[in-house]
Image 1: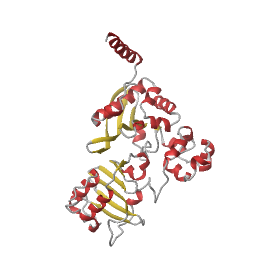
Image 2: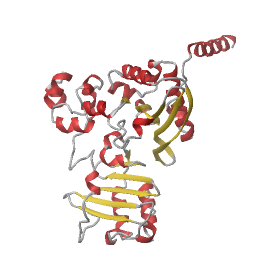
Image 3: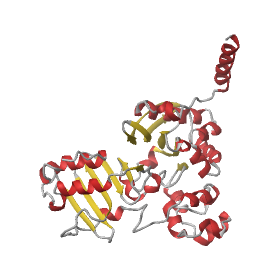
Image 4: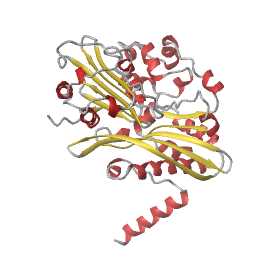
Amino acid sequence: MRKILLLTVCCILVCSLSGCIVFRRGSSNEFRSDKELADEMIENIIECAEKEDAKALAGLFSQYAGDSTLNLTEQAEDFIDFFQGQCKSWKGNASSHEKSEYGKTIWRELRGHYSVITDEAQYKIAYIYIPFHREEPDKAGLTAIEITTEETFNKEWFLWSLDKKPGIYVREDREEMDSEQRLITPEELIQAAGLTKEQYRGIDLEQFIEDFVITEEDVDTLNIPLLLEEYEPDRKGGLFDVSYLLEDDIENRMSDFTENVYAIAFMENKNTSTECVYYDLLDRKRYQTSDAYLFDNLYQTQGGYYADGQKIAEALDKYGVFSWESETDEEEITDPQYMVLAVEYEDGTVFRVKVSGLLSQVLPDEYDEVREMLLLGENSGS
């Protein structure tokens, strides 16, 4: 007993002397709150930067992200070089979504967005973090981090890049961004990554490069063979980019509303809050997020197993969705509200209902039940 106690004390002393960060991942995070997990992560990131510990910063990432990014520690060093001073204050929050089955959490994802003020500068830091993944534990941890200055963040052209691929992004100004924007060609990718024909057999490399936004510089930072191994080429009309479902006008369908349904997409922007969900009935997967990036970045979104997509389609018919009008309210409002619901069929046709204005006034009473069913993935059967 004394030996165990002595060993425990020694471990505590070693950790305190080395200044190491205790980072919990896996099942221990299942029942912790989003706020606790999100705030703990930004504190860990800041602590790594202040202590100039690139190895510890890279250690916050998941095994999957580490395997996908060849020089994660070097990227962490760039992050630390960019982050100047000691933290005086930070504030922010995180959106979250998760998959659960019968009350048991399968995975959870947090998307943090924080303002950090040091004694030398003001920064914006965003991250994607999976604190818990029961089915694929190697994905538990950070997926991506991005840092920029408050000044750059407030520029009109600024958009976060961390959805593109795993790793660490340091954004300084637009000139640097534009210089890195040219995508590599398939021939350049094959040569630079030393790919064999077997590694990219059957894959549209142009689409692969576009999906992952691969530049010449990225070849040295990404594990291209691993990404190719897990890459699924577009099956039909853009598996990873389904933004086309939200475009164009409504296409009338006279019959067979629930037969041969391929996918269902729903997006609502209401009171500055966005909700998105996409049902892939062919692969029996369901994707959900509180950000519209879902519709053109499915490869970066965790798709949960979902077997009841056809029942959802049948329920839409029962709720009369296919008879809803697509006219919009002409009333001028200060806080715009917008909704689009799309159903795609195997023959490529798409049925859409699009509404803007005060949704509570424009849409029928059944809308609340349809919205709840789509976002929760549950059909009451009514």
